[in-house]
Structure formats: structure tokens, C-alpha cells
Image (cartoon, rainbow, N blue to C red; front, side, top):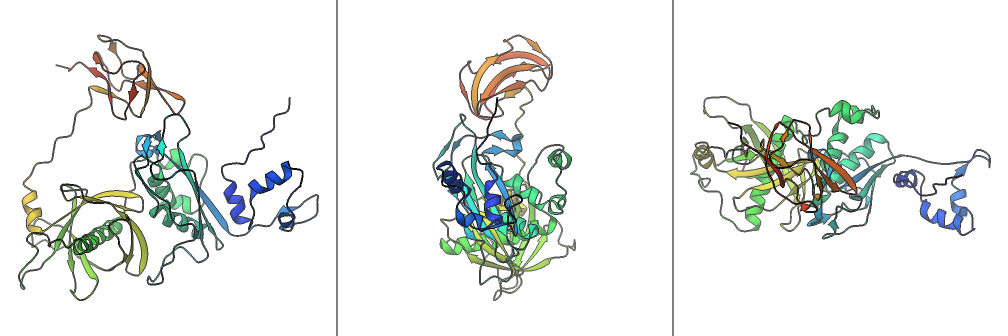
Length: 423
């Protein structure tokens, strides 16, 4: 018995990028048709027939972009791609008006995909969206930077996806240093992925950028200034930027000079006599169109790309920076001081419920109403992406009600089983 696996590997773009103008698919067709390896490919080889190797240069790195939610243990996510914009392919983005892109010269971006805006991600097939590849003739660090920049410009909405996790890995010091054993994820993410954690400096930059983009948006839409910010000449007209919404982390952002693009940022303090050092930074908005979520910005001469989503009916909008999705709310100082008297909404108690962790089909139940179950006991089986997933109880209790019937299509977080309330 002889098994032959003549398919291309998923990582074949890496070989193509570092070896020059090589199309492995074309080469396979030529060989299969009896024409042999294309002559121009043979010209790229060094050595004799017994030890010939293809020349290679530079460094390429590939990320598989999947409709899998890293915040849910990489469970598949289904639904239509409501918004889908790939980063520009070809030479990596370089803006002449910006001072430093930080991604190296000669970098190239490639996207291999088979989806467009509106394409549905179903529970029946592999949820890979694309392969995002970055190449740099300079080396690995520059290729990583180019890939990170491309991720910042990759817009995917409608399904959960692994772009934030990939962005976080690319930022990790161990990964950048090349310390990438097969146990990298369990070593550095022992409790799973909880989202990209921005540094203090990055959060200050995010606050300043949000204020600048918010002001740009108001001017673009011809909106009036924030209430209470039309201050008198002797009163500082500053803005409070809340990262995480009304009850999130607050920063005060003010213009250092109305005639310049410099802003000062400092954390909000309840008392005016608390001295907190403010950071001054120069913010430039290189281009912003209300119809496009990707915004070109520059912070102290360093180019960045952020994504800005439209406001909801509360005035809150989302900003994505370095893979971190943060809800932003802009308020005047007076509005923020008044908002601090409001109570945070209660968190829904789901301890007495068994929820579906993913969209899928309910295949079977292992319990009935009235059964006593222990923590870790099997409750049901949900099939998704041709895989059967065992759903287990996270606590002991008595099954009070079973909701969906066998064969039902489940949404993520849909209630499957409810336990009796403990007295």
C-alpha cells in the first residue's frame, strides 16, 4: 500500500514569497501534464541535479485568519460577513506625509481568500477566511511588523475571528525573539486568551486618537460641539474620553495649542488638587472617511492605522487598535462628573444556566428534567463544523427545564438547560 499526498500545504505562500516569482500551483499543473518543471523555475536553483535547491531571500510569515472566536476558546463562529475589507495587497502601506511607518522598506502583503462581504460562514465547513502573508527582504522582525500593520487594516465584522489573538502573539516578546516552541500557547496563555492588553502609553494614545477622531467626525458631519465644552475664554475646554464606555477608564484630553495638532492626556482624577502628570503628544489624522472604518493616524511621528466604527444610539463608538477592540464614549467634564452618580447595570447571573458556547445543531441530551447532575457531567452534544462537542455542567444542581429540542439549530449563548434555584 502506497499513500501519496500530492496536495499543497496551507503554508505554500511562504515558499513562493521567499523564492521569488514562483507559482507552485502552475508548477504542479505543468508536471502533471508531462511538461516537467518550468524552465524559469529551474533557473532559480543552485547546485547540481543531485543536490539542487531553490534560492531564497528575505523572510515571510503567514497567519491563517479563521472565523473562530479566541475569547470562547477558539470555538467556530457562524454568520454572514457583514463588513469585509482586506488590507491592500502588494507593497506594504507607506504614507509620504507620515514620518515613520515602522514596517521597513520593501515589505509586501499578500491575501489568499475566497470570501467577500456578505459571504456566509456556515457550521458545515472549515471556517478559514483567508491566509494573510507578509514578506520583508530585510528579515523576520520587519516581516512581523508588516503583518501587524496589515492586521490593523483588516476589517472583519459579523463573525468572531482570530485576528486579535494573532495580533497579540505578534506583539509578544517571546515570539518576536523567536522563542516559539510547540507549547507556546499553553505556556503564555495558560488561562486562554482574554483580549489584547494595551500598555499604559498605548491607552493614552488611544484616548488622544479617539478625541481627535471624534472631533474630526463632528466637523465632517457638521455636528455641534459636546454640551458644556463651548467654554468661556478663561475656562479650559477639554474632553473626557472613557475607554470601555461610561463606566470605563477616563482620560482628560485637551488641546495644548488651538493652532497646533498637539494634545495633552492625563487620567481623570476626582479632585482638582490631585496632581497627575499630563502627557503631550502630536496627533495627525492622515485620512478619515465616515464610510470607511480604517483611519490613517500619526502619533509623535509614528504612523498607525486604527479602525473606527459608527456611533450607536448612545453616542458610543468602537475603536480597534493593535487588535484591542475598545468602546469609546466622549463627554464633557460636566457630563462625566454627573455620570458618576449613575449605578452600573447589574451583570446577568448565568450560573443556573447551561448555554450553548457556539452556533450548531443539538444532537442529543444526556439528562432529563428532574435529574440531579454534578459539575463536569455531560448535558448534551452540539455539532458544529462536522465536530461533535460535549457540553458539560459547570456546577451541580437539579435540571428544572430543558429548552430546545433535539435537532434544533442553536445560537451562541442560547439557553439549553436551566437548573432549579438553590434555596
